[in-house]
Length: 315
Image (cartoon, rainbow, N blue to C red):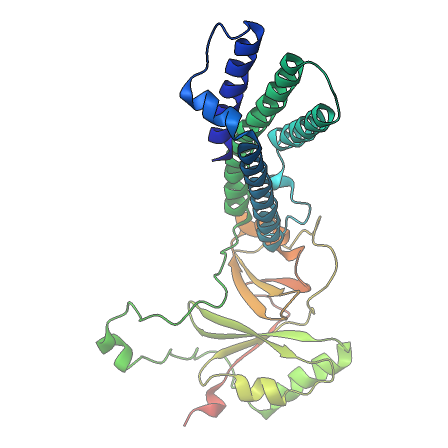
């Protein structure tokens, strides 16, 4: 709307300038006459539209930078484009010309010429902004795809499951690994001693199936009461001796493995996220880890990990 109205005002200014320069010989069209007779109203509408789209762009840019922070781009590099910088410059130049016109007392033809220049600059600025937004949109999509992060919609309302009801009626319990020890008192005492000895919170991975994983905390005090009560029956439990860290992830090189268990603690909510990380996806995971409160990347089959099956809770 701002671009369309700006073009109408620009054409009207040129027609009015030609009319004054020819001393009325060219005449005025009904549209130009309407714009001229209601110049103050049209200028106000145009100013409000310009302020509206500027405000909308600022809001969109802020939301985009928030999204980029979720994938580890804390600098907002993907939300930058030269066209946005040019748009800023032209907008400032247009308002400076408008201010100069209102404070001057030159000939009508001169004032209209400068008015046309200011409007023209703002129309070009809108065009540059549209180009910039389109290019930034592509850059953000590429950055999200390269990060490997699956963005989740927060506070999504409950929806009906796409799985047929008859399949949900009697879910099959995962078969526990036969070659793993029980998660008995001796196992949990070992977990307690490991956490208390390191004096740091440790990450405990609960695996209830090939695609069902979640992280639990074992506090630095070694109190395993909460974690032990939360683990599901027949779940495979793995405690890693290296605690999650809060330092910079840039430059981190994991030891070679066929895959990794990714640990992320949300910096705002404290929620723990599990991410299965393939070797070629490690850089994307580390990019996301830069915005986490704490993170960890644990090799699948880590020989230093302590693993057991929670058969003790089976009825």
